[in-house]
Length: 483
Ligand code: ADP
Image (cartoon, rainbow, N blue to C red):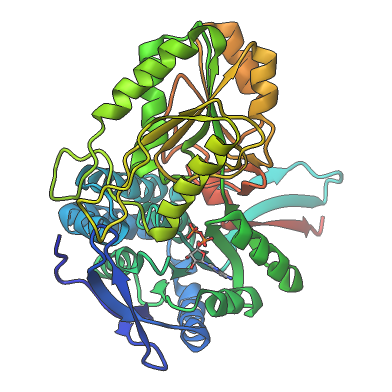
């Protein structure tokens, strides 16, 4: 799929610029390894320029009324939807999405802009009764300042809007460092922001040497917060680095989501939801079910239905409008699936379906969606997120065992449970140790709801009014009166 009119420079202070040292790198299409675009390979100097621009833009952006900022973000939202096909083609080309997944992501990305455009008008303060008659206690909320935003490749547009929609709405300028696999979507978003009238310097984009740019975000005192989505490994690097400058962090890290199907579930609906949470975006989301627990009494039935559904999934390129799954992002992603299958099978699991590389697309990373059964705690697939279309099935006897094993992971982002028993549903959402619980719902994410993980899955929240609060600092004002 060809992408036209793509921007190929970084965006600093409203201008499209090359890297200080003029270096570039190629962005490749994971479906065919062809070049999608050539973009600057930036580093420290470029990040510093972007921080200068954002810092310069802060006072005027902060001074605008919430209504003025809201109108600009809403305009940006409208432009994004006007250019939906253009953006979807970028997501197809650089992230390998199917055209349906890509269009879905544009809608999802836009939903954060409209939500935060509205919610930004509702940043309230508080007055608190004082202990003496001559005092007044006020609590006000202020934008934290310039935010460094680091995002991954699996949602190249939505992972940005869910952060910067909120940051911008409350008055914070941003410097975005998108994934090197998918920088073009970020550039397009920033171009649209500028076209919408968002002042120069409020949205900046730099990309290239991630560790150098990350260092600037960590060390420059003008960066007040880093909002990161990516691996737990890099999240920990940022946490260590943030200690020196006590920089605030918001971290959306890896997951290892359990989906638990009980024998009292509506089985067909449960299968449909497990399919949606497992295979959305070709299994490349941090909330994808990574361990599917099925009660023993229905295990055979469930497996049969899953195999039937998975065998109907169509893998293909974006040229095929009916494709359910596209390519994986790169060779490493393909290798990880193979490793998880081989490791599990060598420890006693059974490969029930799929897992082959589709040779027809020799230059892309296409794999048939796969199912393995007989999975347990000893296997890599239990302990690590596969981030691909591999469904590992685990059987359990009773609720207590299911909950205990589901929680047996250092991660705590999302979990799913399928049951028609209300009391059981309540017990489950109370006991599952994750930031998000879907009860009979495989796709819980929504702009108005909080999204965030526990344990090693992260710190902080995105979405809803919670997402706004991340970018605010509370100030307590005490006034003593002359009586
Ligand atoms: P993923 O596996 O989803 O690509 P990563 O955590 O590797 O997850 O990458 C997420 C984002 O973090 C990307 O934009 C990447 O360039 C960036 N990144 C990687 N290493 C660092 C680092 N040392 N400092 C700052 N950002 C980094």
